[in-house]
Length: 219
Image (cartoon, rainbow, N blue to C red):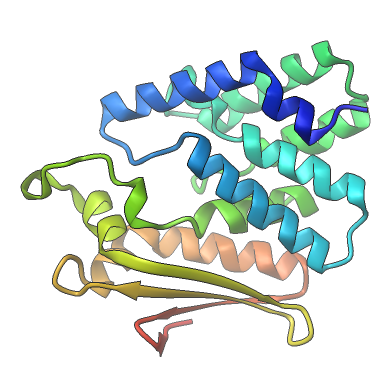
């Protein structure tokens, strides 16, 4: 049985994550390296743990989250599908059972907002964790006067807290944003589609997703 620990220790997977992030850096994207996949893996795993999924489902979710962006090493366009195919080859070569591989590649192939859908619990938790990772440390550009809207929005976020409330069937994301750096409207210009997708993923678990910015409830 392939474990999350083995995945994190794989030199090949580390290389794909590193090289994918280098490519995205050249394209001007925010950080998609080990910090991002680590945060996503933790939140996705915590969500399923809170919902009392079994340990194997939690581990498969962590694996999918850790590998979800490796397709960027090929191209940003259709990176979810490219990543799913890459993950299939890697995991099959490592000897993972087909049932586990199928769950993981379905999730990876369904995490990008242009084509995503919460087809299973792994995909749903991956979507929620991935789309809520907004933070100042993702900005790589050191020249604020050349920030694009993605840089401005991420740099404006001084605090990001995601709370899973199983009893009330809700997931709450609370953001603190510096309005002098970026407006709330800027946030929704680039994140509206992601918020809608996150709400759909939460609904998979019969939960509601709520977003609050600077103490104001927006959805």
